[in-house]
Length: 124
Image 1: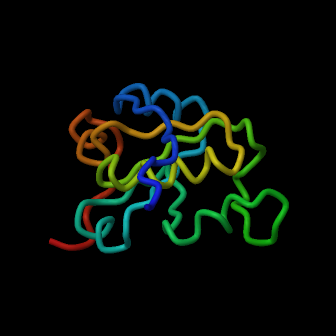
Image 2: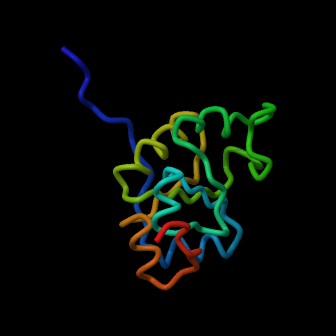
């Protein structure tokens, strides 16, 4: 029998709260696909991390770690197209010891609907 218990995910915060955290210096991580960003628009203030590269990009002290990464207690805001995409990423970050991680409730659509900064789609 397989374990159906999901790993804990980071709390959901509304887009406005996430926007304030980013404005105050939180590391903003966009885990949407290249196609998703091209179709919907990018987030100029976010660092793009492929979901398959989360472990490498958040390995403190490694050659592959994000330059913006300062420590396990750094505030991190993760966004995807929806919490279904950001949830597993936040669970991975929490499991690896990061302590101040949140995800945007409603994902990119909620961010855009709230009037926060969004780049133009590359595709029309």
